[in-house]
Image (tube, rainbow, N blue to C red; front, side, top):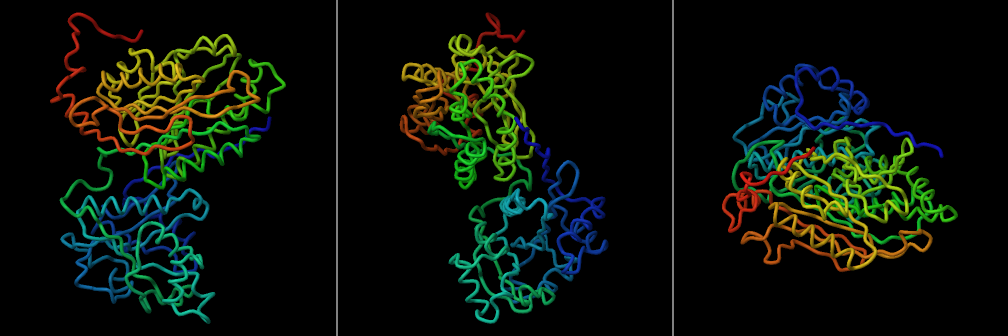
Length: 509
């Protein structure tokens, strides 16, 4: 089988430093070769000196690939009628006012080779976060309309903008900004005269900060409310890895559209490709299926970065050195990934396929705190969830595959118990439907759910969300990590605090 080669990424969102100038200049020359090229070094130095928090960059394995520059202004001083040179002081940001009320977008640019990863959206999200955390009323930016030159003979700038808003015309800048929640306040004339593609016009765009309440930390503050997306998907016979990835991308795109931090897929999520090997006996078929695992993982990793979401890639078979395992992948949105091997394999996995159990329990660090993954049967052993919780895990993900309702009930009730006894959140999901040409994977039964501790701060049944049984659908729910702190210190029952280590203890050998 031909292996698909993937470029290895390691994305990092951070603030720019003075030492970055040479590399940022190279990046700007790539992007703005026809618009004057890079900022001069004294302009760049002034930008960072006046407002270091507002200058953000994304690097990939140390290479600068995208950046966004901002300033704070007292917007009443400038109003809606201004030019780019006026408000930015010709790029020196001398009008930056730390006591102002508006974040103003000075520049944003992405290396042409990286535009497929949606890094621009990630930078806009970072600026919105900065706007919220600095307690600013709004985010204002002057936006180019580079597609206008082709329509200038027939459309006024106002009419062109209306056509773009109605999606009759696609503009590479304005369409992107409208998609990211901005609205057009006004058309600016002579905003950037050198911009021939926009005929010197620009849109004055605004994003209103609905959280304008109180000041918090700036970019990079830890999150307390985490949004989970859970996919209960239909098992259907597929004929290629590309087809499987397109099916997965549909759900990733949909869940990412709700700004979820994680998306969870079922155990053996690659099983729809089993039909390609229906001429083989079950042990050979599952090993042939394992040949697709790296390609599927790499494709999903690209999506994790592109859609800015952490993916729990259910599980897939891994076959190496004559050993077969069941492996779940954490695919982080920064381009890194780690694996959790199923520790307790079922009797059926051993007898039908020869799957072996892993020997390590991982607690993963993520940008939303510590998490753990227990694959299906592992959730039925309370020791694992307790060990993970003792190492700091606050969310446990359980991808499962079950064929009958009683098998599903074992996973559900045990997972629910893990949430209550460890005072954590547990998200579970499986697959539904039938796979006629996949021996040992032919029927499915599932009902996805997200469980919480059982106390006054949580739902009365300790269920945050649950799906309709045996129906393809998604769940999206927020989990509040601050509530876990409350229940662990002030809850009516304190399962973690009231353990008796003087009588018993749990250790990993």
